[in-house]
Image (tube, rainbow, N blue to C red; front, side):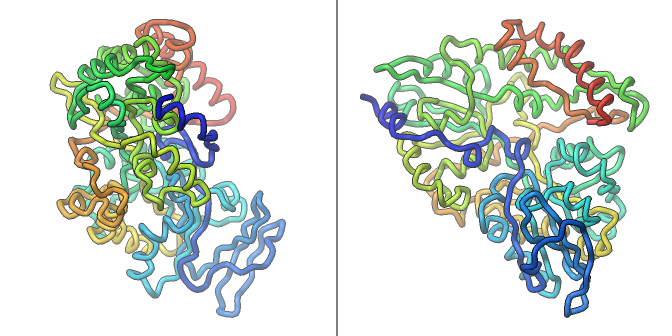
Length: 495
């Protein structure tokens, strides 16, 4: 019996808490809370209705009722930071290690309270209690329009950033551009980190079948040839050569294509929204992905199978998954560590940049970024700006990099520090993490972002209905997207 068969037999399925689909920033948000300084919330039970009261120190505190009935309150002498949509922050102590401890040291006189969605509170709980965070850290791609803009928790930071001396020109330009594309002509946030997509590969499978490893900057054409050679059945084990989540491939597309056409307004009415996902660039993207999905027996299931089964040669996934698969323990819930160690026995992990389209197109995915926002309701805007300036400083960004996070800041010190505080990454070539440049979205002026159902292209129309990708793009553009926008508008949503 093969090594893969033994590992597969002994492994129990992973829970959704442990394994989520590719792109944590694009997926579920985290849980947990961190209280970094004195003045933290007390242990009194949370009342059913919000009310404010004075503490002995004179601070006014607001309890926040929540679905877990756990005590939670925010006091007006605290700088309240709320974080969402980066899965590693769910792990106890992760935020403190990579950000919180340095933040507390840099601002010893500022009481800092940090909570991570959704244990015990969510955006709706804070809103119901009349509490607005002083700083929000969240995914700009979807959450600006879904969660922050509808609540009025955003404002153009252009003037504030200039007055604070925060230079967006030092940060990942594609991440800045992504934020601008959601900011109605301004800039609502500042990128902090990029949970980039990378190409993971299992050297055990390559060695077994005497196939050369992937390299940084490899084209999709070469990846396809490797995938064909590595998709095979041996000793009752089916090996898949290549898995790449088709939704993320289109959402974060490497041509920087934006699906919306200009309307003459930054806030067009739903009936005025027009999209294009059938032009030559979109057809090129679709054709490149389609061939991988149609390799016999290279059936798309989940990119999680790369680690869960150990039978997948290559998979495109996020950087935090790479850290977890490398057994960087701070990325793994302690209760799951033994299981992860067992699964890792069947994977000899390596990482490169994602394949590129070639033909002059050498960009990696658009940035899977996490950004900071300063709600206009905050009475501590000056303090919040000071904290934001520190968060994008080389000091803070080098610390992020040392723990296996790709920061937004571009500098030699950031690159050199990558993984230096994470022994699990020693001996792994991580040069692919910083190879190339993220694709920058363009053509977003005079449009409004909607969270379109691009998943219909491949997962419905190609893989289920059996349509060609050209037809799938047409059906999605002419039927699925208009129906989605109409239904959302009728339900009172504008995303």
